[in-house]
Length: 109
Image 1 (cartoon, rainbow, N blue to C red):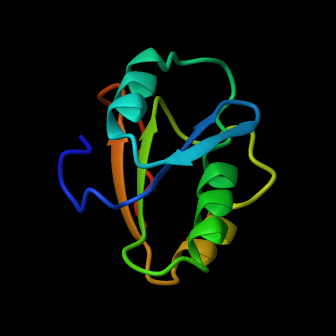
Image 2 (cartoon, rainbow, N blue to C red; image 1 turned 135 degrees about the vertical axis):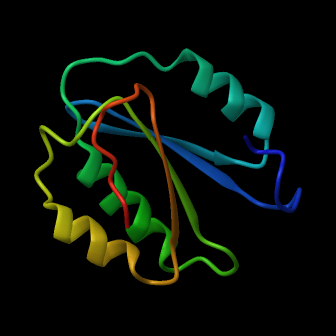
């Protein structure tokens, strides 16, 4: 998943269920790929909160801004709305979505 891009790119990783957890930004792509393999679906999906927080962090960074969203369903527990997340990410950020299970709603921005 992280084989594309410049080796100097920095990647931040967020997981979300009822709350959003941010892991330290790192250039070590292999560690992030390993972390992705360990993700398990759980109750609660704060998808909009995660997009909002990641987008806000990216606003002041130079270079490419990309958010990859992997989710097992639609948002169920965010304090932020879809429109909050969409507006936060409009500032030169590209979104890629990948639902974990077929048939679930996709968040397209």
